[in-house]
Image (cartoon, rainbow, N blue to C red; front, side):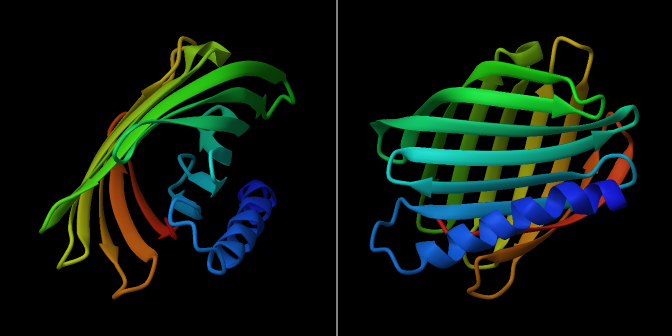
Length: 195
């Protein structure tokens, strides 16, 4: 628990600062995202802030054999309505204090219909050839969303997760519950999205 707090609080502070700053800007593409999913030996925290084409992301995750902290700075290139390619340097530090530098790229697309939203995300980095793919389908009126996530690397890590979330009224906050299939862990979480 102490390790989680040590890594989580700086990310939460960054997300809060970016969220607060984002409320005063007119640029709709700017914003912040924070997510924390808690489970025994399978927790994760993500914080992202964006200004124009520049994005900075921090992450922390734990697993049975330890934990890792990541950072990624990227420049975005628009690919079409709601779609972006993001490329930039990345850093990973594990619980043994091993530091790895690499290059990370990601493609994302958000679309909104009359009743539903769809968010697609795919990321890969040269550090242990890590990858992440996410699909989230949301229902606008109810505030409910369902997602599936696939992630892994060439060091042998694999994880698939299923989650559902519920947006709290008209706020940017959502409550989450899900299950990590490989780790066999139920998780509870919260996310804040000002995009």
